[in-house]
Length: 156
Image 1 (cartoon, rainbow, N blue to C red):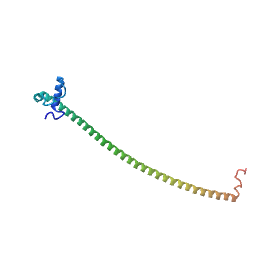
Image 2 (cartoon, rainbow, N blue to C red):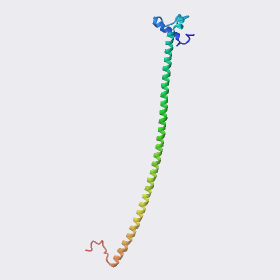
Image 3 (tube, one colour):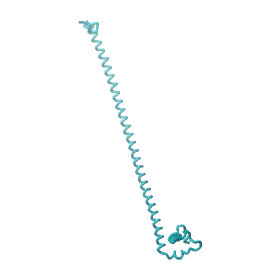
Image 4 (cartoon, rainbow, N blue to C red):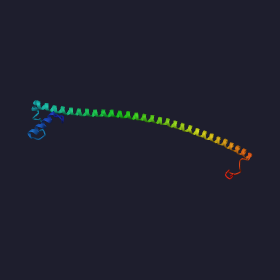
């Protein structure tokens, strides 16, 4: 029953004893000659159990380390997701502000175009009124004989 497991205490004990005595690492076939002494060698058994306990403790610490790493990576992933969501919201807000500013700019540009057209119409109507006044004044001067037939340079 003790020799059924490859990591059994009996096999480990036999291996160590064979290394210490210089014998082969293979146990002899048949009943083990060390089996009787093995059951009574308490310090060797305690050393074996301590080594097994150390191996289990090391495995548990390694598993805990990996668990801590995975937890920290999960926390980092959640933090990065929140940052991405905040950046997406910021971009969306920025785009809406940009659209509002663009609409205000186009509205101001349209208003400016309307005012320029109104000014052009006003200037055009003033030019027509001024042209008609000049025409009327030149006919009055011509009727009185004060307006010369030329451009006014040759009258001297």
